[in-house]
Image (cartoon, rainbow, N blue to C red):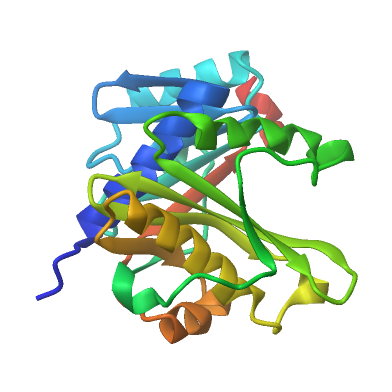
Length: 241
């Protein structure tokens, strides 16, 4: 039996959003609903039931605070009828995957750098720099890695890991399109998992899409379950204002 469950994956995802909300937004609860806002995005994290009145109150608070998009993360067993009635649309299915940290592979790609600050984001993306404050909290529980193209192309991608107990969640991992298929994805993955392992992580977890699953499997991950997401763009629903 795998020592990591889907519930562990959900807990890691929730902890990640909670820590980001504490730094960049706010968190609140209403009965069984746990809301976490970061900038103009709001997340509803793994409720076992969704009372319509509590959902309505959450959406009203979201509109009042300038939220533009709302994402609901659910287990497959959760009744989503209240979300559908509120105008949410069914989204992508997270494929929960896990691996012992020792199976992911050793860090050491010279194109990958662990960082606690960055000047890589500009223009409309400049605000992303603020999130790196997570890496400067002590004891450290979040790690950020940047990838740089060795052919003169510059900043090529990023990844995070976040420690929840003995579980390292991997998040926000992406290699920009022009730099893919050069091994940067596996380099990023191994760098952030190794950093969390030094702090006590025993297993790594992540949610994959079909595009990324083959990469994760090549680094020792295997799928143990799946979930579902639901999404609402408040600007698309003026009648809810």
